Image 1 (cartoon, rainbow, N blue to C red):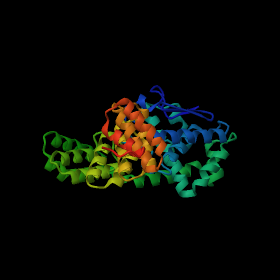
Image 2: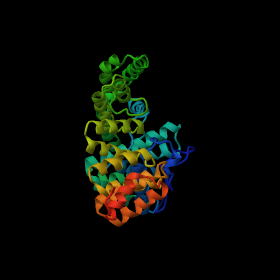
Image 3: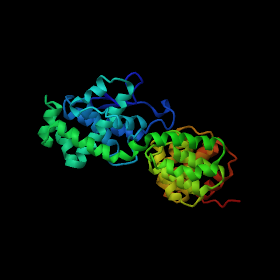
Image 4: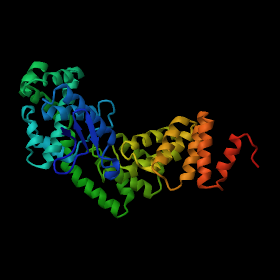
Amino acid sequence: MRTTGIPGLGALGVTFGNIVAMDSPSSRPPGSFHWGSVMRHELSHVYTLSMTNFHVPRWFTEGVAVHEESAERPDWGDRLTPDIVIAIRDKQLLPVAELDRGFTHPKNMGQVLISYFEAGQICDFIAKQWGEAKLTEMTHAFAGTATTPDVVRQTLGIASEELDKRFLKDLESRNKAVVDNLAQWKKRAVELHELASKGQHADVIARGPAVRDLYPEFVESGSVYETIAASYTAIHNDAGAREELSRYWHAGGRSPAALKQLADLLTAAKQETEAARVLEALLYIAPLDAEVHQKLGSLYLAAKQGAPAAREFQALLAGKPVDEASAHFQLAQAYRVEGRAAQAREELLAALEIAPGFRPAQKMLLETEGVPAR
């Protein structure tokens, strides 16, 4: 069994052989987790566990799973948190030969999360330096009783100590700026939040970008991106808010409220295609959010894209919306765009059964039946 959960806190997903069990998104606050990443992570375990007859070390199965989260979609996967930055700065990462200890016998709960990050980064490094095929080769090598040092030497042709040396050099060089700037970023971010709380929005907008760029990877709650965007919003500068929230999204930000605001701003600016991209990404973060399905379905409907619009209104109906009649009507509109007249008629009848006086549905039904509307 392998899980993406933290011992004692409950698992997001669990893999039993070739079976994956996951928490429902309804069990967690929207925005807490990326459900697409969780599913990809757990499916990765199915392969590594099956291919090795469960002999794979914990660090490698978790590392491959973390690597796979963002292998195809860079905006998926975990982000560089302050705790991880501190671990890099203070040389707290474990040698690869001992990395299992970070999962099975951690000194504290934080070390588990850091070990997930380190394992994923090691697999990223191996894929970058030796190619993705080496990860598959290592997986097969772990099917026997070989140890991590044995597998590293067999597949990569170097000692595990040499892998540690090369990996750390690469990791530290890529993150040097953030590590060096962490203390200054913390201090200046606090000052920026204080300016925002006092309503000094011009100062926030003027000083914010320099603070943000000290640690651009930080997109957790209370990020500088959100602070700057809120100040733009407060002075009714929609273009500024849109640009800042766009930066936030491309940096990996996942706040449902922030991304919905971005989608609204993009729609208002006639950038409907980009707004739809934002909402599509948000579905992996808040898949049960009726507002997201409604807005995305409406964007697709306006663009005459019947199939994706129908998908969204079907999802909306599955969640039992407050205005169920309107949802049936919108689904009928999507079916009509697709040329599915019979399905459109069924949805119109469903809408009128709920709200017999629903004039738009009456009118469309008459048109569907070939009867001139009065």
